[in-house]
Image (cartoon, rainbow, N blue to C red):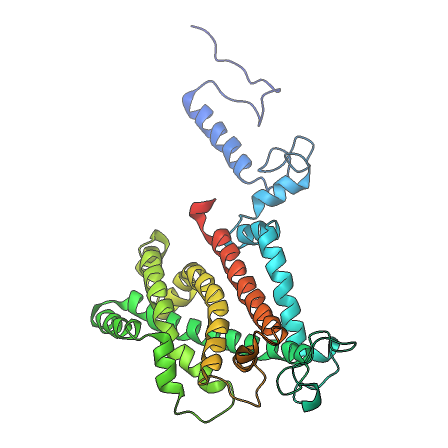
Length: 346
């Protein structure tokens, strides 16, 4: 009979016996040692033969150690999108002059001189004067504050109210979902401009709060329906079912698992709606039911300048141009965010 093979000192992880039991024990020991190796050690995950990081330097190992998320991929795509960069710069400029209008103008939007009514541009007054002798340039700069405040606050209010109601309806379903869906249908049937004429015509306040409240009242159904559909889609994923099986409470599943994965469509729609709310405020102010003097608004200036468009077109063109650029910037920003957050477009 052949003699048992002797141990060889050059075998990896020690000698491997020829018997089945001995081989199994030595293989188990070798595998256990391999599993215990830390990343970055020789032979370990991400480690090279010399103990350094695998791949081409440490960047590859770090990228593999940090899994990319939807938000990191979206931010990388947005930074490379010229539409996002251009619209973002315009919006940042609008926000800055809304907070500190004195940076680019030293005039008072309420200071008027009837002797200069409807005059064209002159040194120190590049946009000319309106029908009351007020500086059009100064009023155009100060009008950005009203538009940005109305748009931002209305979008935040609509996003919060719509997300809460739609998210609860999509998560719990049943009678709550049915009741909210019928209420949403009722609000969808109300024309926005007609509703503004009816509701705001009885308001005498000249502040922005009645206009913001009206926009939130008629704007939340769209966000609510989108949030409901997004929550229903995320709720069916395996990680949510696993959390439910492990005994997670409804509030924990909603806040920790469903909300972070369902909020992207709401952000996109709210960003696009911000420009729409700015245009709606100007429309209501133009019709005389939105903001009222002495509040400075592009809609008010457009309304006051419309009878003089043939004789003094500068009174209308400058506030209308500022309004168009602002609305276009927010809509372009919303489109860029939508393209970045939509996995189907990757």
